[in-house]
Image (cartoon, chains in turn green, purple, orange, red):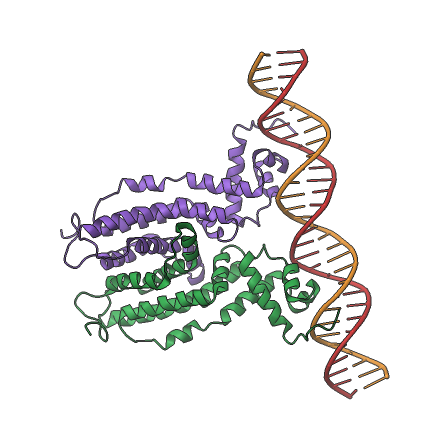
Length: 211
Length: 211
DNA sequence: GAGCAGAGTCAACGTTCGCTCACCTCCTTC
DNA sequence: GAAGGAGGTGAGCGAACGTTGACTCTGCTC
């Protein structure tokens, strides 16, 4: 075969194609042969770079997760605005992430069975940053009296879970019900509900609210 | 081979074992051979009863879904109590369903990729009954002034999504964080938050509250 | 230029998969 | 009791899978 273009970063190319194929067809539905063909190499070449299919999948997950710095993005919003702003920040970030990176969404959806380690990685690197941020903000605001006395961890997990469920299943709803529902509309509807449920009666939010 | 016990309902037995195995190992991870061995028959016998693996999987989903009458269970609670009671009814039912039927939970988790029709069936037969009930109750209570003006469909979808996410991922959290969180604790924490977020300021709930 | 290591190819391996075929019982029906 | 269909067996098909081994090519270092 001709010299082809130089490999440059063959490993990266393989990872990219593997990521696309795994997210589209799942772990079992993606044959090494397919990844090789898409990457323009033979199967044996893939085994030069990776120890096996399972390890390749793990690397795909790790690489995909490393593309985003969720904790870093959220850090800038620490302590800013009222609780409603905090919830909106998290919800917006999750939904825009899902929109920017559909591959990640598919990988998250498919990671239920195939490869429990990948699932744990996604939980740790995608869910947890949101939850940790939320727990910190809620705890702070509970101490300040803005937020009612509730369990910060459970509340944060559930809020993030709600938004994730929304992001993961948006496609299903539009396929089933026909009508597409805009992510922004969902946020505008639900964030105020949750914020209102969290807010203390006696105290207005310290920096926001009331103009 | 000896006469074995009579088949009686061989088809049902196969469905049971297939349900167990599919939920435990997923679609691709479950070989017809395994289902046959578990059912005490040969593979060929399975093809006497089902047209193929895909159809068998569909039948498993349908049979599993038919075990429960969610809409029927909820019908008795129509129009009863305040909005908080309504939310609690839904959340309790989802979580107890998940606890009673872990197979259903696994099938829901795994249905992301494998067999899109099965996924749609689960949405239609499991999610939708909860959402429909909630939409009806919220709409009624919005008209009555108990609930603020919000989008009943989006709100219902998200609430059910939150509870489902909680039911589906409870195992992951306990594996990751070590500490098990009781389902009832989650309900007690979150239902009041959501209810409070939905309730109109001016009006107390008509039949509940205030005692 | 010899030596070497990384990256790639080609061909094949052993296994497993979904599925089918020819044949063999039973059980019911006339 | 003959007929026949439903349900079961055992063997095996062709295809696809993940993986490997023997080999080649290329570019770098003494």
